[in-house]
Structure formats: structure tokens, C-alpha cells
Length: 354
Length: 213
Image: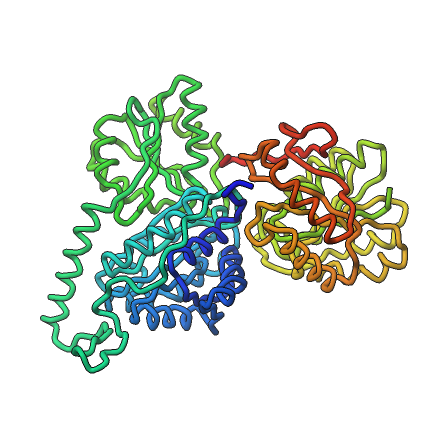
């Protein structure tokens, strides 16, 4: 039999995390990400790992903080309302320079909202969400294969830059089943992390994991150092896919499930004689600004396709720098835009409308 | 032909697709058919997605009023009691995955056993991560039987890799299927495959195309 397996997106993240050396998972069930926790519950005990269903999302993220301080790879996952609960802990992770992976399989909001897919936590994921000056590295998979691949990357980037990383998926990505080639098993041993609290054996000064700074000038200096790292991440780690953009007169920007619908729309538009293309951010922080800025100089208009009331469009507009008009085409509340809606939007622009 | 056909199996083995197509198959033979979605596990991708198509074909659909909605409620519709009380119709039951899904079937198992006119088929996809071997499937089958109080009577071979499935995909899994038949002592009811690739003797499945495919 082939090395491919048929997996749900949620399961693919869980298995990829394990194969990337994650042996600690803390979570709390919530639709539509529960399969991830259920998979961890089945697998972790068999491989000497820890699965713990915490008493709440808040407890889970603080358990993540504890394990991350020891330098071990650790993950938590939830869906939108649960990720809101985690925000304080995420800010503390950022403030203590701890690597960890947080998965958000988004559902409709605000509030308790609904259980159907959404991308309306874009602001929360990319502009903070918790308090203070910080960023997460935010990865946006658009297939079950990428759910697996980006999970391994999230662990690597989190360790490399000592920042928390987030997989920003949505309910459809979590629930859909596709064939996937799982990544090879990697060593679960702690990578070189001289800052981790692993016991000094009286051979070195002890390490402190902390986000409290009593002197404001020291806190400012810490923020400056962290922002130098963020600048390096922005310069090196922005990822995106350009699809049919070379001769495109109308550009679509979309990530995750919205990008898949947008690809269908681009194919139809080109059959109808309208040169459309797609820029698919694979990271939304850092946002692929250079790709969008470059494209905006060549196209007649840009369309931001989202499962929200319009959040990423602000980053698209900033990147456009006024070079071309930027229009929103979106659904919210758990609805997915249909290709026809995107086609109609671009056709309207092509006829001179807005 | 038994009056009741129950499709159970591992989470994500393809029960809903097999179930919907099997109901259409029975209907095409001129039978009065009800299809019931008793899935209490899956929030998305439900029998209800095919409701219009099924009802157009004259099939009665019993489904939770909350399926595909924002109400995340483990609920079985009251109409489901007609499955065992009205013996004039054939019925195809879509049971949720694993032992958790099979719990919902337990409510009906006394009546089903008493009537004794049913097939309970285990839908198997060897390309699913936790059921890649005959032994692993046997483990899930035992958990399902314990949860619902009914014994399997047969197997459905539904090994697939989604849109990347070829005949070779199915052939490669056939050895494991033979082992499962041997180990379980159960007959193979049929092998199912996407209608675009189904070869002679296979049960063809018409699958729904989604906006992101």
C-alpha cells in the first residue's frame, strides 16, 4: 500500500506534531477542532507522550507555558471562542520568549457564534489579541497536506525565533478529508535551547522564565530586542503562492479555504476571457507585503476574498499603497463564498464597477 | 434483502457516502426507502448535504434538525423511531463513527434484534490512519459492537484516497481486506468506489463535488 493516508485536517495536524517531536498536548474540546484532541488522546499514551484535557482553555495555555519553559515541543489547539480565552497566556508566552504552537480551527463569531467555518479571527491572530507589543508567526494551510507540513514548520520557526507560532485554519480545513503524505519522524529531544529551565546541576547560573520587568527601561530594551527578531522574521519568513499572476489584470488575495474557492473562480474567469490571478498568503504574519505591493503595480484591481466581514483586506490595502483599488468579496457567520460570487465580483470590476 | 441496513465503522471510513448511494440503489430497484442520519459525532459533511437529491428520488430522509446548523447538539430526531416501528419500508441507517457514534444505535438495538431482519455492515478504509491493518479494524469493530449491542454481519471495502483514488489504490488494499474477512469470519458485502473508477462488480459511488474542490 502507498505511503499516503486519508486524513482529516485536524488529525493531520496532530500526527504531524507528534512526528515533529511534540510529546506534550494540552487542550479542551470544542467543535470543529475536537478530532485533534481526540487523536492526541489516542496516540500520546502509546508513545510516552502527555495528553491532558485541562479544566479550561486558560489552564491549557498555561500548561503550554510551563512545558515551553523546559524547552520541550508543546502544542495546544482550540477553535475561536477557546482561542479568545487563551489570549492572556499567549501574550505571556510572547513576553517570556517561549516557542510553542497554538492551533486555531476557526468558527463563526463573535461570541459563541457558531460551529461552521470562518476566518474572522484574522485580526486576533495577526494584530495581537492579547495585550502588549508582540506578534505570532501565523501560518495558513489550504490543504490537509499543508495542515501537516505547516505544523512541522511552525515548530521549527517557533524554536528558531523563540516566538509562539499559530496554525490559523478554519472548520472546513479541520473537517475535510484528503490524502496526505505524513512527514518523517523527527527526534523529540530538546534542540539547542540554552535558555530552557532543565536543571543546572550546579554547573551554570539558573535560567529564569518570566515576562515581568520591574524597570521600564529594561522592558523597553527587551521589546526592542524582540522587535529586531520580528524584523528578521518579516524579512525572511513571509511565504505565499502566486498563481496565474504573471499576466493577471485582476488579482485575488485569499488564504486557506477561501483560496481554494478563489482558484476555481480564477479558472472560470480565464475561460471567460478575464485575466485573473491569485496571491495566496501561506503566512499572514508576516504578511507577504512585497508580493502584494508588486502585483498592485501591475493589476487593475485587487479583490480580498475572506470568510469574514473584511479583515485581511486592511493588510492588502496597506500593501497596495494606493496603487490600485482594493475590493472585498466575502461571506461571514459560517458561510463559504461560492466561486460564482467571486466571478461576479471580478466581472463587475472588469465592467468598470466597484 | 434485509429490511434494515446499518452502516457503521471507523470515523471517516466513508459511511455517509456509502449510505446515501446505497439508499439510491435500493430506490432504483423500486423499493420504498427511508435513509436515517443517526450520526451524533460529525459536525460537517452529513447525509443532510444530499437531502434534496434523496427526496427528489422519493426517499424519505430522517435527519437531525440541527445537522449542518450552528447548534452543536447531540440529538436523534423523534422520527427515527419509525425506523423500527414501521416495518413496511426499507431503511438505511448512517451511524456515527467509532464506538462513540455507535452509542446512538443502542437505543434501537432491542427492536432491531427482535425483528431480526437486518444487515450491519462495517465500512472499511485501510488508508485511514488508525485503521491501516485488519487487526486495528477488528479492534474498532469490537468497540462498536460493545457500544451498540449488535453484531456485524458483513463488511464493505471502501478503501480510498479521496480524489487521488485509482483502481490500484483499491487493489493494493485487497490483501488486507481478505485478512480481515478471515480474521472476522464475516463476508464481504461489496467493494465500493467512486463511479468514475469503479470496475466490474464494484458498487459505484456518486460523490458530491464541493465549491473548494
